[in-house]
Image 1 (cartoon, rainbow, N blue to C red):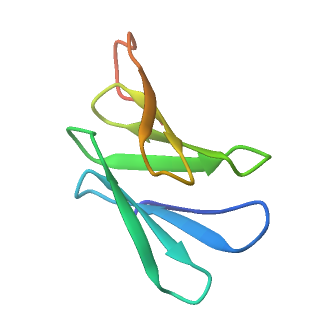
Image 2: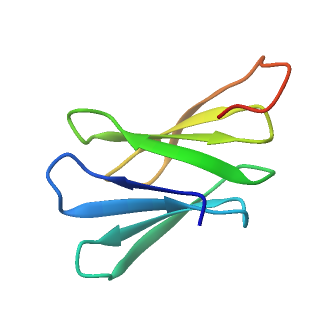
Length: 85
């Protein structure tokens, strides 16, 4: 696990890993879902202040924005010339 990010309400936690995923958990440890789409190690995640979205940064030079409720990718930010931390 490379990073852990708590939702603003303290109900959920996002973990990111070298397995190219973001995993969402309840505060009780129940796995809620897996966000897939990166093509390399994910090294950072953060919730937006309202808790509606999660951002993830990856060694594949992208930042992805995810809907925290539907767990769908909203968009992928590209153009960096090196990995994003």
